[in-house]
Amino acid sequence: MNDAMHRTTLAALCKLVTDGTHDSPKLIKKGVPFIKGKHISGGRVDFASCDYISHEDHLAVIARSKPERGDTLFSNIGSVGDAAFVDTDREFSIKNVALFKPDHSKVDPKYLFYLLRSDGVRNEMLAAKSGSAQPFISLGALRAHQVNVHSSVETQRRIASILGAYDDLIEVNRRRIAVLDEMARELFEEWFVRFRFPGHEAVPILDTPDGPLPEGWSARTIGDLGDVVTGKTPSKAVPEFFGGDVPFVKIPDLHSSFFVHSTGETLSEDGAASQSNKTVPDGALCVSCIGTIGLVAITAAPCQTNQQINTLIPPNQEWTEFLYFSLVRAKPHFINLGANGATIGNVNKKKFSDVRVSCPTSALLRAFHKQSAPMFALIRNVEYANHGLASSRDLLLPRLISGQLSVAHAERELEEAA
Image (cartoon, rainbow, N blue to C red; front, side, top):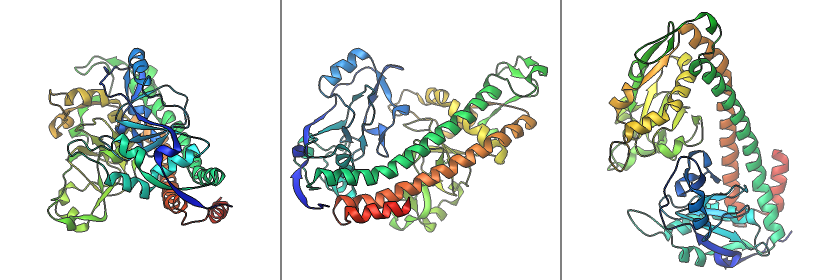
């Protein structure tokens, strides 16, 4: 096994290092995905929350840069520092994103992706960023950036295979979560949207001020369904308030998961105690309400949130699954509420609390909880397993990429783990 390394530039490893459009195409509700830096997270492109542009605008964008399978994207403007591997043949356009097209004779494509994700390389590039209102790393700086790489492409492939094994397990689990999500969501839609719940044939539909509802149902405000807590950031003037064991939830922590298993920032016990009325329990429902509106996730431990999140604490566990899907389904309404003419949308606590939800009878709510709670519990466990896999991969990645850990030793560790 050849673990020899050499130093080179990112440009020397690639056939092309370019970026996306510098224009602002008109965004539409359906069309070609339009990916920006904020849509790159966890090594993946988040197509679920992206914007769209017309096919005509897409053709103009890809005349400059066309992402293809095997390329790596790197957010270099705004949300700086996240990388994603292109593992799809799906057509999409990019903006505020750098595009690395690897030279296969010099670098394995997946190895290049892991190289750009490694803490050492990423932190070096973040140190070179410019701008205050809108941080950025220029293409020139990216092309000229020097990195240490394994000289043998075969060794690079083996490193990518080791790290990819963890990602493959994570992807299998994501698919399991997607199936469970679809099953629970379909049950919710069937019972509470289409009103085809068990015994619905014998229940008349009544006209109400909130629209047609089955007899015995009622429309209630979110504020009536539980306690609403709007988060707050402890004083930054007291550094001791941060860096402890209390999760501090912010909008990036809500992306692409049912449960909040980890957070990018934490509070100390003193920091949490400085605003103890902002602590929410395990099983609370966080909703992003400023800027990126309508993301929903369930807390997996007692925590606090920042001011961009309103959190609903259900009256008991029987409400959790019903309220989760009700809040997810209300996303378009939340977005409309937040569109107040300002640059950044804002759904304040009163607006949020006043949103009305069509609620079923207690018996039907219990029946839904009985069927959906096991699905949510399994989703929570699988997400937690993915968190552990990702942590193991992220610990291994810098040691492998830097050459600190031999490839042969890492392969033995992977075999033992398997």
